[in-house]
Length: 107
Image (cartoon, rainbow, N blue to C red):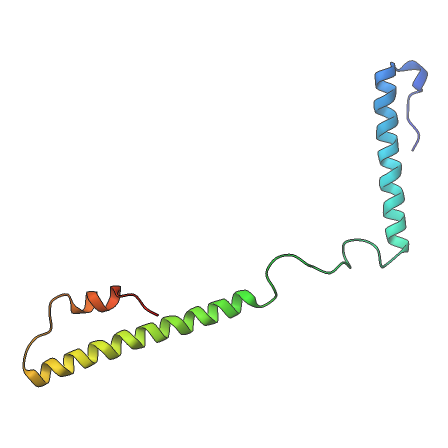
Protein backbone atom coordinates (compact mmCIF):
# COMPACT_ATOMS: atom_id res chain seq x y z
CA UNK A 1 0.00 0.00 0.00
CA UNK A 2 1.87 3.00 -1.26
CA UNK A 3 0.74 6.53 -0.52
CA UNK A 4 -0.19 8.85 -3.35
CA UNK A 5 1.75 11.81 -2.02
CA UNK A 6 5.32 11.86 -0.81
CA UNK A 7 5.96 12.16 2.89
CA UNK A 8 8.33 15.11 2.40
CA UNK A 9 5.50 17.34 1.18
CA UNK A 10 3.42 16.63 4.31
CA UNK A 11 3.84 18.04 7.77
CA UNK A 12 5.19 15.78 10.51
CA UNK A 13 1.71 15.24 12.00
CA UNK A 14 0.25 14.32 8.62
CA UNK A 15 3.14 11.94 8.04
CA UNK A 16 2.51 10.21 11.37
CA UNK A 17 -1.19 9.79 10.55
CA UNK A 18 -0.40 8.49 7.08
CA UNK A 19 2.12 5.99 8.47
CA UNK A 20 -0.39 4.78 11.05
CA UNK A 21 -3.07 4.30 8.39
CA UNK A 22 -0.65 2.44 6.12
CA UNK A 23 0.44 0.21 9.01
CA UNK A 24 -3.19 -0.60 9.87
CA UNK A 25 -3.97 -1.42 6.25
CA UNK A 26 -0.96 -3.76 6.00
CA UNK A 27 -1.94 -5.45 9.28
CA UNK A 28 -5.51 -6.00 8.12
CA UNK A 29 -4.33 -7.30 4.75
CA UNK A 30 -1.87 -9.73 6.35
CA UNK A 31 -4.51 -11.00 8.79
CA UNK A 32 -7.04 -11.61 6.04
CA UNK A 33 -4.51 -13.43 3.86
CA UNK A 34 -3.32 -15.60 6.76
CA UNK A 35 -6.89 -16.49 7.78
CA UNK A 36 -7.68 -17.50 4.20
CA UNK A 37 -4.71 -19.84 4.08
CA UNK A 38 -5.29 -21.32 7.58
CA UNK A 39 -8.82 -22.76 7.80
CA UNK A 40 -8.54 -23.41 11.56
CA UNK A 41 -8.00 -19.76 12.48
CA UNK A 42 -10.68 -17.10 12.72
CA UNK A 43 -13.90 -16.68 14.64
CA UNK A 44 -15.96 -18.77 12.23
CA UNK A 45 -14.62 -22.03 13.62
CA UNK A 46 -14.29 -21.14 17.30
CA UNK A 47 -16.96 -22.75 19.47
CA UNK A 48 -19.75 -20.58 20.84
CA UNK A 49 -19.22 -20.44 24.60
CA UNK A 50 -21.57 -17.68 25.75
CA UNK A 51 -25.31 -17.27 26.02
CA UNK A 52 -28.07 -19.78 26.60
CA UNK A 53 -27.64 -23.43 25.66
CA UNK A 54 -29.34 -24.56 22.45
CA UNK A 55 -32.95 -25.53 22.95
CA UNK A 56 -33.25 -23.98 26.40
CA UNK A 57 -35.77 -21.37 25.23
CA UNK A 58 -38.05 -24.02 23.76
CA UNK A 59 -37.66 -26.15 26.89
CA UNK A 60 -38.65 -23.19 29.09
CA UNK A 61 -41.66 -22.47 26.89
CA UNK A 62 -42.70 -26.11 27.16
CA UNK A 63 -42.34 -26.10 30.96
CA UNK A 64 -44.24 -22.82 31.26
CA UNK A 65 -47.04 -24.24 29.13
CA UNK A 66 -47.20 -27.36 31.33
CA UNK A 67 -47.32 -25.22 34.48
CA UNK A 68 -50.10 -23.09 32.98
CA UNK A 69 -52.18 -26.17 32.15
CA UNK A 70 -51.60 -27.64 35.63
CA UNK A 71 -52.69 -24.36 37.21
CA UNK A 72 -55.81 -24.12 35.04
CA UNK A 73 -56.69 -27.75 35.81
CA UNK A 74 -56.29 -27.11 39.53
CA UNK A 75 -58.53 -24.02 39.38
CA UNK A 76 -61.18 -25.84 37.33
CA UNK A 77 -61.13 -28.87 39.65
CA UNK A 78 -61.48 -26.71 42.77
CA UNK A 79 -64.26 -24.64 41.23
CA UNK A 80 -66.14 -27.73 40.05
CA UNK A 81 -65.82 -29.31 43.50
CA UNK A 82 -67.17 -26.14 45.12
CA UNK A 83 -70.10 -25.97 42.71
CA UNK A 84 -70.90 -29.64 43.27
CA UNK A 85 -70.79 -29.31 47.06
CA UNK A 86 -73.01 -26.21 46.89
CA UNK A 87 -75.42 -28.04 44.60
CA UNK A 88 -75.73 -30.87 47.11
CA UNK A 89 -76.27 -28.39 49.95
CA UNK A 90 -78.65 -26.34 47.75
CA UNK A 91 -76.86 -23.05 48.24
CA UNK A 92 -74.89 -20.58 46.14
CA UNK A 93 -71.15 -20.11 46.29
CA UNK A 94 -69.77 -16.84 47.54
CA UNK A 95 -69.58 -13.96 45.12
CA UNK A 96 -65.79 -13.78 45.04
CA UNK A 97 -65.00 -17.50 45.19
CA UNK A 98 -63.64 -17.69 41.65
CA UNK A 99 -61.54 -14.56 42.21
CA UNK A 100 -60.09 -16.11 45.35
CA UNK A 101 -59.19 -19.23 43.35
CA UNK A 102 -57.54 -17.17 40.62
CA UNK A 103 -55.48 -15.05 43.00
CA UNK A 104 -54.36 -17.59 45.54
CA UNK A 105 -50.67 -18.49 45.47
CA UNK A 106 -49.72 -21.64 43.57
CA UNK A 107 -46.98 -24.08 44.43
